[in-house]
Length: 115
Image 1 (tube, helix red, strand yellow):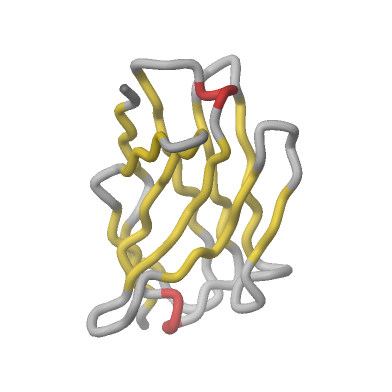
Image 2 (cartoon, rainbow, N blue to C red; image 1 turned 30 degrees about the vertical axis):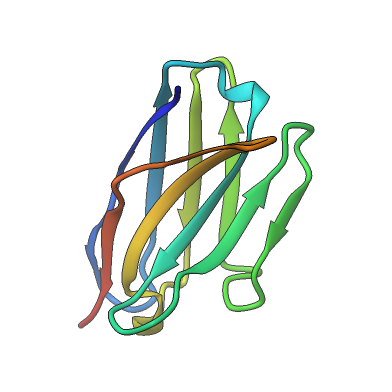
């Protein structure tokens, strides 16, 4: 069983930056592929960034070049650095850990990009 807790969300102006953190407990994070997804009101959840156990990374086209996912297995942490934020990045951001048939989600953290 893995417990995930996201933090770092908030209100930021367009063009600003935020760093989201996902703290894991209950198991070694190194076993899991980790990803960040987001869901805006009235929209489907969107996968934005994935980092595999081996460190391979993928981004959605909507965030490529602006967001950076990273992990620190020694601290059981995953991060999402978000730069050049746009109003359309406004959403609840979720951390997810996946390994074989095991999937765990955090409770989400709100990111609002507005002037």
